[in-house]
Length: 205
Ligand code: GAR
Image 1 (cartoon, rainbow, N blue to C red):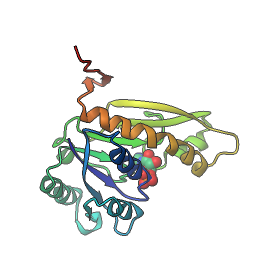
Image 2 (image 1 turned 90 degrees about the vertical axis):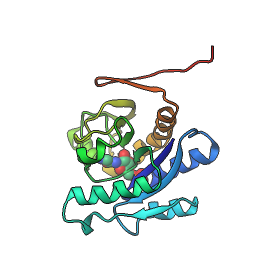
Image 3 (image 1 turned 135 degrees about the horizontal axis):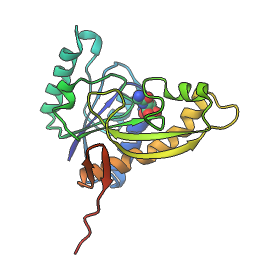
Image 4 (image 1 turned 180 degrees about the vertical axis):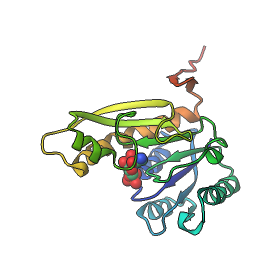
């Protein structure tokens, strides 16, 4: 299954996906293309290092979300993309985009959703004083961080944590979890009924 990875920043999750692909752990998922909405980010360099096509579709060049998304969709079509991973992609997608890939877009988010959606999840968790946070990998629909939850892992919040230290601890976990989920999706192992996602195993008979 051919995936696009959409990024906006440093791309540490992209790196985890690229390394998983190189080791064979991502199969049958293939990273077909990497797209950033911001020029000059480290994620683009990481993609190039692994020999992947890497493109910028700068959202600031479009007068509205729909134009930006149409440009993204055209690029993904060119690369015959069947599924999408949001790996630190910090733009909200509308139904125009998400309806093109039903149950074929996954996002990683640094909190235990539905707690702390949005762009400042770790800062919000620290400010709220929670003792446990974590990672959520979920299907993406047109709601903000609201699609069906595929997998979650807990991460403790430690005394003295700030948003950065908590985020660093969470990222170590998401770098494991995201490639696992991408491989499961590509293997057809994720079954979604309503909001509930189950992992099914196609055992040899
Ligand atoms: C990741 O930790 C991801 O969970 C988060 O951005 C970070 C990107 O890091 N995403 C969100 O907050 C989405 N709401 P990376 O560029 O190093 O992968």
